[in-house]
Length: 276
Image 1: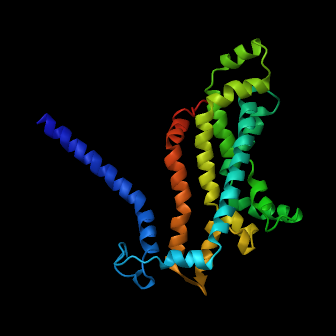
Image 2: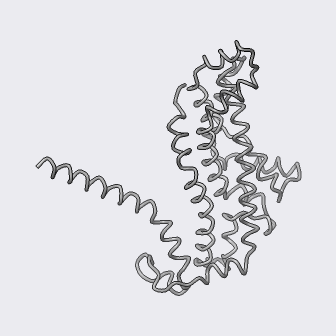
């Protein structure tokens, strides 16, 4: 009887996990399914889920009619540079907020927190006017520089640094280590899992960024993959097969990144700490 109850709970638990997993993966499966359908089968059936026949015309259309690899390179370059910049700035800023006491520190940190609750769209116009003044419209600098600092990244790294015992830094200081050596030999090795997790989150966000590159970039050769999707919109009519083919291709780098770094990703959040 007890064994039957345990089996029932186990079956219920696994059924729930499978249902949630399928619900999460359904949009991606549907996207990949549409990308290999003939154009005349896209809207057949209630959801048009499974293709009756496999067609690679959507992918051929993408590679033959668009500079897909140029767009992919643009997305990769912007995402990598912006991720590295935000991680480096967040690392040094978080170290200062967590280790030093200086006038206005708390007020300045509250200002950093405030940037997390302001919608990006609310500051787009003044930011756009600023980069226009610098002549950065239609340049990668215009996309990258205004968002090199991230309040979320600074907050996450500060919380992790607060979980590192101060005694370690104090012992190193007694042994004659300066702040840079303490930062390099104690805080950096101890925070590698948090840095890896933060890097993954930031990279995925910048890889999928749509609104800001859409405002700044106008040259077709400088577009990124998310905004290049409108390339297949003809007189208000969307060509769904090549659009889904580009979307499917654009998810592959993110999947590969997560598959190779999922251990660090989980460790980073498990060790991030929530000390105030």
